[in-house]
Length: 115
Image 1 (cartoon, helix red, strand yellow):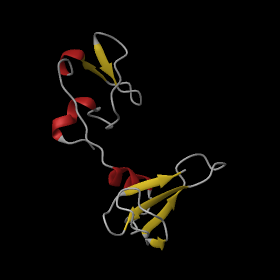
Image 2 (cartoon, rainbow, N blue to C red):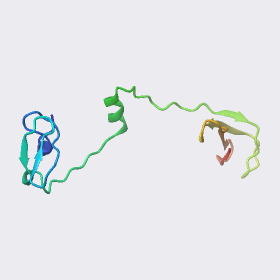
Image 3 (cartoon, one colour):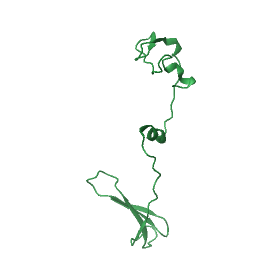
């Protein structure tokens, strides 16, 4: 059930979240219990939801980010002229389009990409 800070949002009998069908009262959609709207008026509500919470609620496995294994290629750096770079590819656009290749110069760290 809700924490004591948020009790005004929930039915005291069954714990269901209240709806506000009228300017006079709030009502439980399940058991039809009513509360005076004055109990709810001018209350401020805020929520913070984290991705981990959503995954946990949906029963999804929390996957740690995998480190990308960089490969080396002979590619001339646009900035320093060095001829070796690390690269990796990612599918950045729709599946029917090619991958984007990301390059990082092994000497100066300059980054570039090719679509």
